Amino acid sequence: MTGAKHITRRKLLAGSAAASVAVLAGRAGALSYDGRLDLAVVGVGGRGAANLKGVARENILALCDVDERNLIAASARHPRARLFADFRRMLDQVGREIDAVVVSTPDHTHAPAAAAAMRMGKHCYCEKPLTHSLNECRTLIELAAKHKLATQMGTQIHAGPNYRRVVEAVQAGLIGPVREVHVWHTVSYGGMDRPKDTPPVPKHLSWDLWLGPAPRRPYHRCYVPKWWRNWWDFGCGGLGDFGCHYMDLPFWALKLRHPTSVEADGPPVHPESTPKSLQVRYEFPARGKLPPVRLTWYDGGRQPKMLAKVLEPLGPEVAKRWRSGVLFVGSKGMMLANYSNRMLLPVEKFAGVELPAETIPASIGHHAEWVRACKTGEATTCNFDYSGTLAEAVLLGNVAYRTGEKLAWDFKAMKATNCAEADRYIRRDYRKGWRL
Image: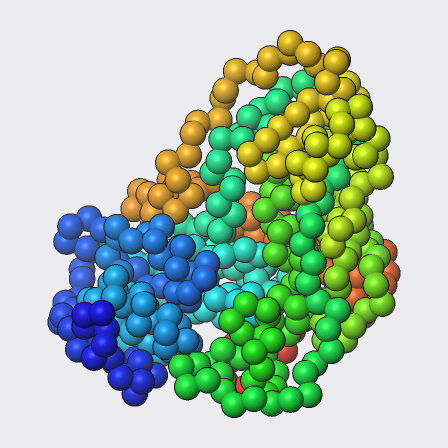
């Protein structure tokens, strides 16, 4: 390791520059002198490391992470970047010098970091499910519109060719009007009780900053670095993890927006931990000439009952390849799809049928779309108006589950009109010192 080995913990936590960092001059224009964006990246381990790699050709001006090890690893690749443990301090010190931010923290700190930067007029790339609660989603959607910002949610599969071909086929009417969609994934989190032991906080971790706006609790390895999705205070369970990836396909193909009702069932609700399995039923209204749609989500090993029936003629090996996927049910047939595969059903009916001509251009890359949008003002495919609306629907499934009610949803008022209890899950309180 080069200059990174000279970084002291005191410098990391104070947000000082690394020993090798150069003096940063102020800018009058929107871009660096060489046409690159000046970026700050919040969260540089895990998905954050992947997102940092996705924008690595730009000018990485600042890196922020509560884990010293992540900062040291990222600094080795970007030695000129200033280092911070607290994104609030980072924005205070370098906010005037940056064009945009990338946010890749756990769910519960997405919105505070993104909103703070967006209020400063900074473009934003943020990981899915965009936010931890619905009101946070709506806030980011409104900030993006108010400040005319280039935004993108981290649903990278949206940029792949397979989703494009499925969207074209469904929208061309190949399977007829679609009134029913099933979406499922094997993912399973939660079903845990809070640990009773209280091990010491690792020296490399700023635990209070990791908690951020969440209520204070003792450190435990079952929260960080990777199991936070098991807990309501930090994550949104399996639905939050994969709902935005897989429900993205029907949202795009069927032009879905806000559901009118949502109901869910799963194991008994745990006050602290997310469910190990879940089934959520959404009702979407007609959209112009498109009919109403019922979309059902399944996780934790649950699948639509009709899946086994439609795949049975194809043999067990085919069924094994569809442990996660999306099934569009149209009046003329069905389309089965996942990230990289697609299949028209019944197979014999669609034998020899060709997909429609390609009309959706290939993506230049999910991160590249956003970088270009920041520089040119062009639209992105997962801007917060689209992806934030998708994320709201995903998060609403958890609200329905936690209330145990079929929610009648008024999206304009952001309120379940028949269930006052839902309000406590639509909005959340922040710990002192943190704000949206």
